[in-house]
Amino acid sequence: MIESLSPDVTLQSWMSLMIDMTHKKGKIKQHRWQPGLPLKLLFVGYTGSRNTGADVRVSEMIRQIEHVLGKNQSQLSIVSVDLKGSKDYFPDVTQIHIPKIFPMFLYKHCPQYDGVIACEGSMFKSKFADALSTLMAGALGMANAENKLSIGYGAEAGQMTPHLQSFVEKQCHESLIICRNKASQAVLDQLHIRNSPGTDTAWTFAPPAKEIGEKILKAHGWDGKKPIVAICPIDPFCWPVRPSISKTFKKYILGQHQDEHYDSIYFHEINEKKKQQFEKYILSIHNALKRFEEEHQIFPILIGMEKLDRKACNAINKKRTHPIPMFISDEYNIFEMLSILHHASSLISSRFHAIVCSMTGLVPSAGITMDERIHNLLTDRDDTTLLLKVDQDDLEQRTYECLVSLHQNKEEIVHRIGKMIPREIQKMGEMGKIFSQEVQKVYPDFCPSIAEGSWEKYLPSLHKQTQHIMEQFG
Image 1 (spheres, one colour):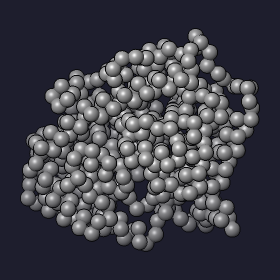
Image 2 (image 1 turned 90 degrees about the vertical axis):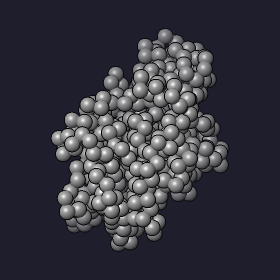
Image 3 (image 1 turned 120 degrees about the vertical axis):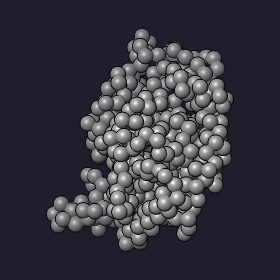
Image 4 (image 1 turned 180 degrees about the horizontal axis):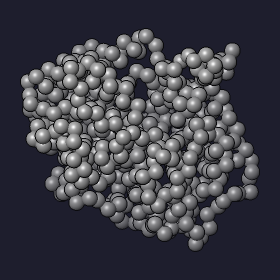
């Protein structure tokens, strides 16, 4: 009976109530922008969890929006699920801890701002957690309730449960969602939610100094010469995460469901079939790497872009006679992680942002995908032969073939990567222009620092290495 209440649906209903209460306040505002004041914006996303991709993309999002609005004309804040995890990131931005159960938090905090920027990449989908999409849509809905700025930035939309889809459609009907691919736009079109084309915002992140990664890699046995083959595995079969009152009770009272627990009242969905799928995925990657390693003199490493990925990295190492170095984001910051990635000669990844962040270092990469994100990325890159699925029957053989292709066809792959980067950076500039126009639509008396001109003007400053790629391949 307890589980039949559906905590996901309860959370959405609670969030809807908070939004309705805010709307009913009418003209009584806790905060409303006035000329001469900075524009106060609240970024809502998945920061603080030591997810390298999330932290990189949000860092660049903040940098671009601050550039467009003007540093002296904006006052930015961001929520964090763990202030310790995000304390070294986002300078000049106020960080606010958000509890796992968030409706009352959003009800209290959102009205203090002139708008909300939802900044999670997997913004509207049930693949990972309905609660995360409820947070994004709930925050945007709070801004809509007061006719304030309500924007999803660099977002993806995919398959949703019927109740979540209904919640998103209702609460975000006045929002503007700037998507990072056409597939997401098509989903939002079906929900009659305003949307515009865009991209991911990690493309402009300044490449960290090579010396940072070199020092770390040499401390773990790299001789400075052998090609580095990076593997970035995940557990693709433990999703989605769902809240469960009964499992929470059993965990803390009876000691059950320990291996399923994610955080607070949230649990992974793990069963025997999923365990077997995970084992096959890990074994396939391990065997393919072992075969390639027997044929080539390489220095293999394991990359964990989120602290959750330690499980998959450990699983691969447990199958090896001699474990290989692991670099996990709970021990290394985003600058160290990216510098390590940029030293790789090739990358096999199930993490979307490992591929994006390695591409800015012109690292040849292949993807083993669990959803549409890597599929969309490699399709746009014209590299579908390097695209695998986590559950395909011939994963071991195809992973080996990808390793061979990354080694043998490096120049062609690098050329396709190089050609894609200027396209994505231009899209990012155009996103900034769309954002500026939306700000002026909601607040006609506000004058953004960048309000006219070509897409280049809406970009934050680019690193000289990024500029070189733009000149070389643009």
